[in-house]
Image (tube, rainbow, N blue to C red; front, top):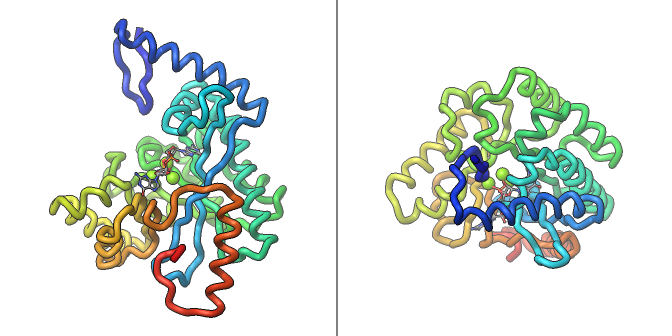
Length: 292
Ligand code: C2E
Ligand code: MG
Ligand code: MG
Ligand code: MG
């Protein structure tokens, strides 16, 4: 018997896998319950411009608050949700919750804030993505340009023309489309020319390796250069150290995200920090990394 292990890797069943299988089926059953009992919540992590001048995005990252297991990470449950198509129901909730939060921030005067939401390939295939997103934005009275959608690079490999169409319709409305985890999905570089994207998020692997390994450094440099030539905005994810920040700045990468800036945090914390920041902005200039 074969079991799917996350992203398309299959293994023949072996006895040691019994507990993994049990955990998998346990979480699958628990997830159905969790979806009906409001057990998911969103954390928000800022994506900022290094000179603090431009719009900050907040990436919505889903967590599962399990009554017995505590908080379960998306790396564990998203693949299970994708296998079972529960990702559709969960994904509907995530988009709506993220937009509801964005609308609340917007109404609280956080006008330089935008929201970024991760999409799964399953959602691209099974939802009429243009209609689905626009309906949600309408419902929350949000302008289309307050939303960015993150799609993992590997989803683009065998993307259909009709999905590309849907994404282009969204871009025409003003929704921003980002390739997530860029550099890990093995897509051919020539594909970049035709992808319906505005933003490229460089995978954190390149960031963590680039200060230690010359080859990663060179690849990072090339990605930054290529993006500029293709008029794509670049976000570097997973910045943990000042040294990494300095390197990216020297390569011309201006949008950054990572523990150095902020960990993902609750909406309440985000709200109070951003409001404090905009208050500070009035009285001082040239702030560096946010929050200071
Ligand atoms: P991702 O979209 O690439 O999100 C970035 C992940 O890196 C997040 O993990 C974030 O907490 C983590 N991260 C951010 N800064 C740093 C850093 O400086 N160092 C390190 N080591 N990690 C950092 P998280 O929240 O556990 O999410 C993992 C993955 O799960 C996400 O990767 C995304 O693929 C998926 N995911 C999370 N939320 C959602 C969602 O709402 N929908 C879908 N479809 N997938 C989601
Ligand atoms: Mg992401
Ligand atoms: Mg992702
Ligand atoms: Mg990523």
